[in-house]
Amino acid sequence: MTKGRFIIILVMVFAAAFFWSGGTSLLSSFTAPISVTQLGMVSEKAKELPDLWNRVYRVVALKSAVEKKLNPKTAVPLNKIPLIMQQAIISVEDNRFYRHVGFDIEGIVRATLVNMQSGELVEGGSTITQQLVKNLFLTHERTVGRKIEEFILSVDMELCYSKEEILEMYLNHIYFGSNAYGIGEAARIYFNKTPDKLTLGECSLLAGLPNAPSLYSPYSDLKAARERQSVVLQTMIRNGYIGPAAAQEAKAAPLRLAK
Image 1 (spheres, rainbow, N blue to C red):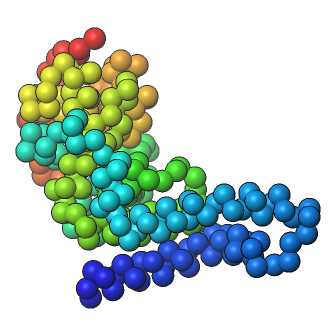
Image 2 (tube, one colour):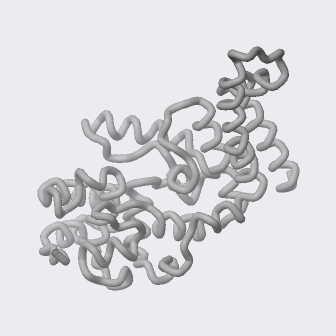
């Protein structure tokens, strides 16, 4: 299937999601007879049209929409981000990152089971691609239409960008807490370093922050940050990125925070 045909299918699915999530009420407001009392309601519905066109534009011209959201001046190239940082994020956020196409049914099931067994939120069900799409374009409302839009944009993102490009965008856009957006600011704010100088201990601590930045920030609760760091290191062991000795050394290493 060519990309053009696939985009057409995506638009069709998006149109279905639009009608499913209430779009018919918007269209009917313009086709049904309008009374004076309904005029104000129609005016309000009309304000929703620009948002609809923005949604369609994001699907058919994704790269252009993405470029408007990113700041290349502050972005850190992936080859300047330690491999161990990349592995830490992938391990705790989306271990099947290189094997899915934007969404991961198996990952959702696995994450649910792991979290139930541990009694805490160890792994998330959303892929890195889905999280990037949400942070770039979407709100946090829990509706069927928004979830379908997230699914469509995530698949589209995987068609338009390589895995390395998606991971680079994610690491440069995700919120690490303490007003740190992206790995460059996070390395500076927490450790007064550039990303390429980060150690395993520092990388594993930072990788644990996006899950709940205000809760796990070492500036808010160092104990909680250390516990979350331990969770990240354990997932890295389980996924084969590091051995137990390296994890123990990282946990034992002192954290020299910038503040």
